[in-house]
Image 1 (tube, rainbow, N blue to C red):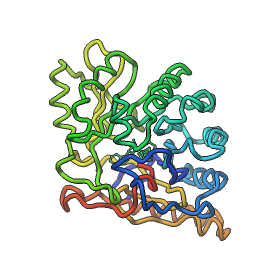
Image 2 (cartoon, rainbow, N blue to C red):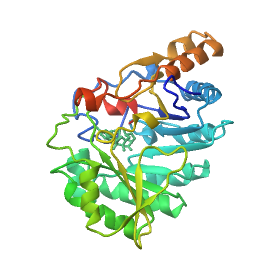
Image 3 (cartoon, rainbow, N blue to C red):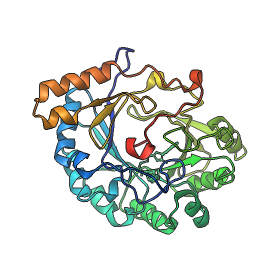
Amino acid sequence: MQDKNHRIINYLRLSVTDRCNLRCIYCMPEEGIRFMPHSEILTYEEMLHLVRLCVQRGIRKVRVTGGEPLVRKGFAGFLERLCRIEGLKEVALTTNGVLLKRYAGDIRKCGICRINVSLDSLRPERFFQITGRDCFQQVWEGIEEAERVGFDPIKINVVAMKGMNDDEILDFADLARKRPYHIRFIELMPVGQNGWNPETFISTDEIYRQLLSLGNLAPVHSHPYDGPAKRFKMDGSRGEIGLIGALSHHFCSACNRLRLTAEGNLRGCLFSDEETDLKTPLREGQGDEAILKLIEWTIRNKPKDHGLLTQGPRKCVREMHSIGG
Ligand code: SAM
Ligand code: SF4
């Protein structure tokens, strides 16, 4: 289905929990987080029902996210059922990788072959500094297990931060040279109370300039449901590099996404706090027609753009872990 700005909306990001086993500095504060009561979080059954309705209105790809999806009990079983929804062409997963070693095989068996693992540093002490947990080795073993069980591609999301991990950009590029991984540098976004400031921000243009020191970067064309990453391949590399300039490059005109939060609110834009409550009508038994109308309304009224460039860095009220990135 199209929104009123003629964009075809076919991609849903589904957050299955607001809980997480890491505390990344830009996403989830160490203290003072108010998690949703379990009764407010959609059951898997409810999520499957809402996804089926979204598929009726044109969603063809679902990316499961969180919080950390793998911490929710029964996740692999849910994923299996999600993958069987008729009309869905692709199911993908974003994880911090901490529990991936244990679950990679089960996830792969569901039929998922594309996985994104977030990893902001290749140095264990720095990983600890960024995430608040000493889990680098676990994540690394998770990535290797994902490769072993046949995930292809394995995308590694790196949130680039000046003065924090920008001295590792070339190390990550080197990883893409040696291993078949897609390293994707993501600009730090102002979300929740994450202390975003211009001093820690590094743009994808700046990253690109650093990468050019390694030689030629040949552009790679995107898959139709792919997000806004600009993709490149270095000569002789097994993997790829992606640049996601969420802030500096205005890609709202090509945005094809909706987001469903763990408590059942449908969002048209990461940076708009406008949400449509789908859980209440679902739990009140209002029927599919009523919910389909709400989905249609949210699609039609998807914000035209995030306004971050014209209005200056503005924060959306929710924390990233409760939206799903
Ligand atoms: N826990 C999972 C993970 O970390 O991969 C899934 C949820 S996380 C919210 C999804 C993605 O959003 C991660 O790649 C994370 O790095 C990214 N993210 C979180 N906060 C961000 C921020 N402020 N700016 C840019 N990316 C952010
Ligand atoms: Fe957890 Fe992912 Fe947020 Fe890090 S980015 S705190 S891993 S939800």
